[in-house]
Image (cartoon, rainbow, N blue to C red; front, side, top):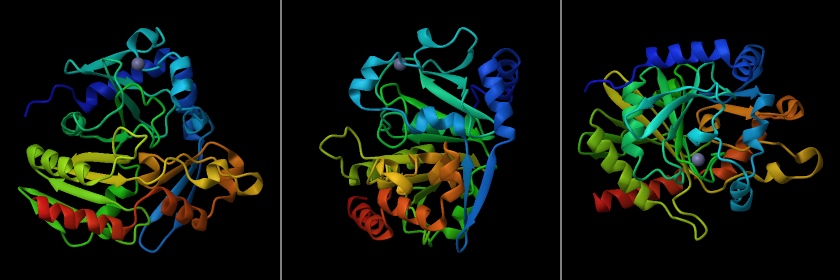
Length: 315
Ligand SMILES: [Zn+2]
């Protein structure tokens, strides 16, 4: 497959944008000083990043009234004049994310203003991972951390940042299902229910994803099963981590007093980097809090096993 865009082009774009765009430059500079702490679990690590600039995203109001009342920040006519992008095919534009979590952080916005949905875009996500092979691509469902649920988009961050990129190989069970040339794994004792597809064929991965998607419930007030997805391309294969979700925001998000922790978990948190926009939360958050949050918002292993059993039948 020929590449239609390369990591090098995107890294050039980042440099050019940092030269001329003060907001982005300030936030990327601030990221270098950001406080990080590491919480150790049995065989894996969760990092916590104190990132004040992310308050806009973590505390974003994503109810339909608030969304209707604001100007969409991913529509091309609303981008700041200084923000430039690189087209990805004729459906997307690759932009620098001016509120970074990663040292290199992209937003890949659909050219059209259409709702955030994965089912017809999952193949595009794999194409992005193949083309931008120095990046991990991620998808946040409309009620799973996306701050623009009304405008389809992905994000990408440089590889080598999320602990899951290495940990999945240690935490995976033996293969639970083989589907065409794709393998499916469940990560064990990883706190967040995680399905991993490993595939050298895009087609097999897309089909298997579609089966997983249709095995998940859609809540009455939702348009798609709640989920976060991370994917990257390495050694000739896609690795795709799917985190089916049971809750948008944990109870500590709206708790009063000392129990309050402003965390709105999304793909990056699922990948092992928790983002706290408030310093008080960064200081106090403990391994126990992480366990509680993930138990509330993610599926457990038993629920994942039921999905896999279902997949075995429909396969
Ligand atoms: Zn828009």
